[in-house]
Image (cartoon, rainbow, N blue to C red):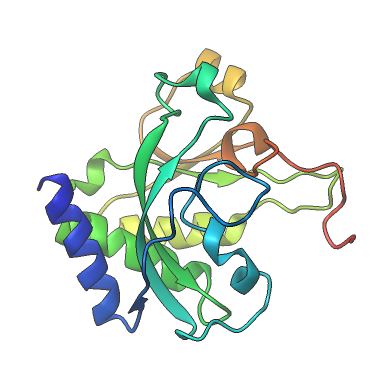
Length: 198
């Protein structure tokens, strides 16, 4: 599949599952806090924070994004400048189980990726911020892999440095990483304000 086929297949797949296709946001947003739309969720922030979206509680989009805040890192395996982000959004409708199973189905059954070549990460937690290890997601991923006959072993890694030194072991498919590798925010990593504080 080429990029156009993946985009149209994703949008149609999510529409078949009750998502409403929403228009792309402008690349140069009305929000003065950023120069460019840098993620698919940026224009949805008021709705992700609780405001009711007039389109409904299940949304899907294909959002062009431009990121300049990490321009010095562009070109490695994790940073790009201009790209299109496909997103499906649940505004209080469904959570991890539905999301993981739906995405796994799309990747394996629609795009045709070999599940034996898929690897995932889960958040290892952060005691300082009161954030628990995400065992729920790991269990869902294990079940998804098992549905394709794969016994997905779990590995506690922590930091990228630990992972680089340790490497992967036979059967490992689900990796627990810290916030530097498995948490995204505009400011980078976990924020200093504890979760739940204003």
